[in-house]
Image (cartoon, rainbow, N blue to C red; front, side):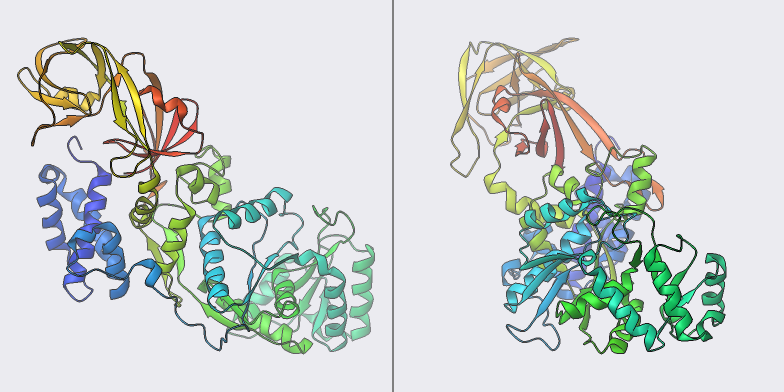
Length: 575
């Protein structure tokens, strides 16, 4: 599209879908929304099929929201379309926790250090922390690290640093791997009670039994045999894959998690914290079941994909005489076109589709941070959109961008950047120093720009100018186009200041440094890979840019918010 971008159409579709739903009892209609988008961008008539598809996606998502969330979303995307001021995030309350009392709520953050922290983990941490604050409770950071083949030290640090960056504070920290001897003691108790058994079946046979609801023949062998095999496993007399320990559950249960699952297995691989000290490791379900009781967890907040495991963990605790927590489901946070699965991200990295865990197109915390998303925006997003429901929602990035813009705008300096620059020769202006404010409404001071007869403006602006046209270089001078040639435009300076209706264009002086801006987009469109998910725009930036620290966010006027990623390189955040 020459005159309107896909991004602009998607943003408009979301805005008008929210407005249409707000006006019609929470249900938007495709037709009226398409009309609004076309009215806002007449040039989009030439790509009306793309408009309709964008509107259908927006309407489908908006119609899945409750009325309060629709109002909150519209207040961020386009507050001018609301007739009444909505509640702000600070005024919104999370839903009450069931069976919760002030001072008696214990929660946990249970990351598995097998990959870098992503936004789903960040939102989970924020949800738990907000409830910890609300009920004056206690929050554990507890690493689920009982699969030594997957965990790495750098991943532990990823979560610690990520949670701290999000503003999440925890009261105590531990690792599941710290309690190996306790797991062994509890396992022996379960063996003696007939609740565990050692199985020598092949992996394929075990899977067949569970799929078909068939009881394993090892289950009926005498307890003394199982304890003997258990001791052999612990002593290292048996090798990986030779035997596993299974829960004596219900082979015919409709919940397949209860069909005699594996609770211990031999893993012949050093652990980053425990080395080679242990060879028999508990599975996720056994370690979590024990730890939630040991830590005194009262409420387990989690998304619905873990629901089927609750019955198994409860059964383990009940047979050990341990107390069960209250389970609370909340809606899962996902963003359109952005994979959060660590397995899928690894595949993308290995295939060379993305450059690493901090690639700005990913949904990892390091990627969001590198892209200029503020932790305050993540916290407010959770306040707006968390709901205690098992539903799965896929959110538009525009909602997070709108919140982020509101937060970063008052503290973000403005600079001039000219993409695909075209040269302008100015007649009659002379050499001078132009003083430009760093922010239009907040006192941040100013920056001087030394300018002579040559400046550069964005190529897209230059293409629309013709002899006789008038425009203004921002904070500088009014110009009239006199002539055009292959090198650029020749303009004459005119007296006067800003005028109503006179186009204002950003500019940079001669000698300005070259700059590359990486513009990330969604990695996927539907099921397909978006081949244009990372574009590069090159241009010139004013000299004051050298004062900007790496990692700082600036607004390049008429271009967007960007974060400095290194010398001569920025990453686009959003408009």
